[in-house]
Length: 300
Image (cartoon, rainbow, N blue to C red; front, side, top):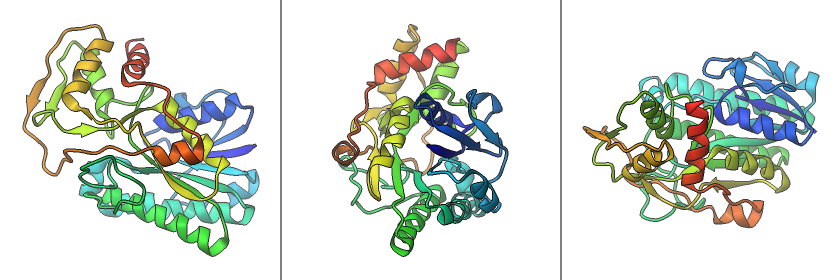
């Protein structure tokens, strides 16, 4: 198979590229390297240094991919609040550019969306048919991208798929910029510093290992159009995560507490039952095992 991975020089994208190469696929990475790194692109993949906000018709025509895994995004919630126009430019207009580039060639798109920023406060594990209540422009722009995919499916008879990801962690996640809390905690532990928790630490999230997310991304090619949560269904408090990170790093340290940040969700976790039923996907890494894998990379 010929495949394009937008954002393939980034954290999640580079793992998707590796998984495709392991199958023997021809892989083309589209990344402007604003946050991605050239060194993340595995040997065997072809890097095209392009911005998804620019027309991609010529690129798609030259490659004629059967599949496009669309992971390029503006993924920093804080940036989306400060610069909602930039956030929409990348996540909405960029997604339309990808859709238009893919359309003449019948290219199937798997779109990486957000679960944690999509549903708002959760009283139980969020399901795909629950109302979307994003609290930041980032979630709203991803929801708009999902709606464009669904519109193209209705208008053009395509079978594009959306994956709503939980809090993804694992090797190659940068502890700066849009980083997840796991990367930040482990980076501080490596530097001999205490993890810093904002608020009382009882806020919960659904942490899913990046290798499992890459498997889910590839499995989405085997089903028709749809929206699927990709998470563990387990809510873990930030306090418990801090302790698990310290255990993975084999240190004894207590976190330091800082004032809570305005607007932060208290409970966010996903019900992955539909992905198990339709994609045949289940996470293979528990939190302890995934953190040990991540620590080995951080400490190397």
